[in-house]
Length: 131
Ligand code: 2F8
Ligand code: CA
Image 1 (tube, rainbow, N blue to C red):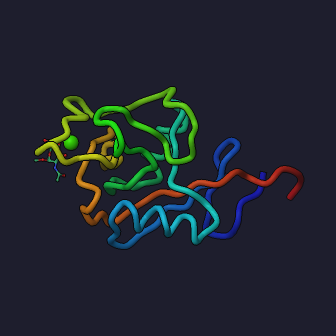
Image 2 (spheres, protein in one colour):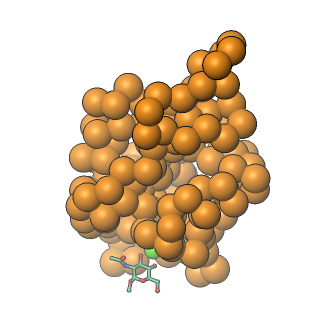
Image 3 (tube, rainbow, N blue to C red):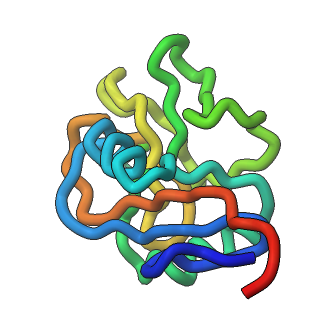
């Protein structure tokens, strides 16, 4: 599997660890500009890889419950078949938290979509073949 420069390969996907303050939607657009999408997480192995590489930064991931409160959906449409909520989360604090961040600890927290986070994680499928 091969990844573009500045992307990191793990299993079948490539990951980009974006830096610089962004709201959730801006992070989503940034991933799309890079021909990727906000990350979706499907196993403990993938979570452990991300926790390590996020380097203790709170990072936006591709999960939100915008349409129906409490019904979390990955923006890439894949099933919610794994979760890693921080204990006590999601708590929809002030009835206004609909976008999910991975905390520095790796645990997930629902947060205000308009919060500016300094980090965000994109993914794309790794190219098959040699190199
Ligand atoms: O204690 C968990 C709680 O911490 C903050 O609220 C005080 C977070 N709020 C923001 O990041 C805006 C909550 O999302 C979190 O649940
Ligand atoms: Ca919360």
